[in-house]
Amino acid sequence: MHMRFQDAVEYALKSLRNRHVRSWLTIIGIVIGVIAMVVITSVTEGVNAQVIDLLSTFGPDKMFIVPINIDKGASLSFSAGPAQSPFGKLYQKDVDSVRAIPGVLDTSRMVYGRASIAFRDKQITSTVVGADANLFTLFDDFYQLDKGRIFTDTEMRSVVLGYDAANTMFGKDKLDAGSVIQINGLDYRVVGVMKKIESEFAAHDNAMIFVPFAEGRDLFRAQLAKNEVTFIYMKIDPAYDSAEIKDAIDHKLASNHRVTLDNKDFSVITSEFIQETVGSILGLLSELLFAITAVATIVGGIGISNTMFMAVLERFREIGILKSVGATDRDIQLIFLTESALIGFLGGVIGFAIAVAMLFIAGQFGVPYLIRIRWIVFVFMFSVGVGVIAGYLPARQAARLDPVRALGYF
Image (tube, rainbow, N blue to C red; front, side, top):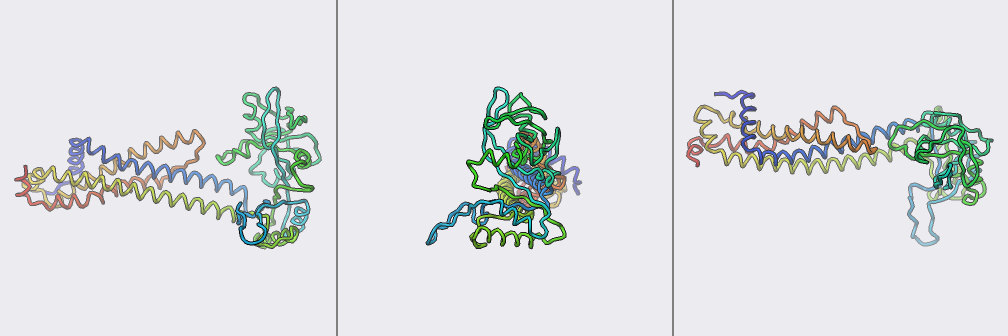
């Protein structure tokens, strides 16, 4: 007798039903592993997709300068002599120097600080950004106007609001082009409202309150040094080598600040730097995924092996009867391998369904996720594969049983 695969599946399903409690306990081990795998891979893919989308707005033709040495972080040197702080300041002189470097097409400045914002009878404290009007041109695929217009650099008491700043900052009281708000007690007219930036990482940008650069510097004059600039943004000519431009900026600003490149108090951020940083973060996420998957694989595999070994011990007589009516070693092995594969498959189906439900709920709270077809295929191959591998030794043991000895087992 040679058993067909269909017969083996039917036989295995009947056996699993007869031992439903133990079967379900075993399936749960696979379910947990599959949930962990699907959730982490989907969230990782979602984060990666959103970061790539954000990076597309900050392409290779963009750079910006921040007043901190990122390589040193916030740590201070404890070596002999005065401690070297990684924090510094940027000035208008730096903007003029950068603008003069060949290959730099345009520059934009920014300052920011906390201010009191009032509208009607409500008052809050929020971050206000003073920016050159051309910032919106530099990032026109990121900051897109929904209502009104962008302010001009020479305007006074004008403000442009991010989507959330206009629609949720004051609860039910929504702001529109033409609305008047008070910033630190002074009246400002809303001249424009930006479209909502559809990214989980853009909450800060959607909440932005922009005023002209000169207005911002005036608002925060008590917090800023003379001619201080918080950030400098640049647009680069694609015909030039961005690495050479970065090098030229590093040398010029180090000269302006009278520091060496090793002890500089600023950093030039490029798209390559961001991509490397994001790559390292996603790499850590991938390592975490591998660790959790490895643990889940071991736990699920041990559970299936234990269940199948117990099944062999409990079914000595059944195996003996099957062999006595013509079942071959291959047939017996097929029965037990099919059972373990079904346990893995059912665990995969249930785990995937629960994981999708969890991701959907998490997505309602702003967690980015992306379920790719290749991961769906991999999850089911993984769960069935774990079942087959874990069930191989018990199936082999069952196939090698002596039918006479098995029939005599009670």
